[in-house]
Image (cartoon, rainbow, N blue to C red; front, side, top):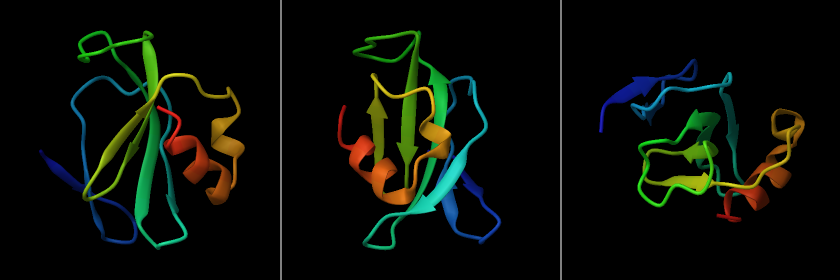
Length: 86
């Protein structure tokens, strides 16, 4: 998977589908750095909606299909909980 760097110089995976929102970067309680963004999902296997929220770290990618419209304002604890709601 192609890699990109963030301001803190940690490499984060880049997904190739069009991104439809600005991304947000946060650290979870285990200090894993996550990049979160909304992404079109028309070509995603198992698609459940036209757009999903993607949580991407160096080691994992989570897709969340049902998420609040204010996800960008959630704190890191709430984003961590949301990331497990597939």
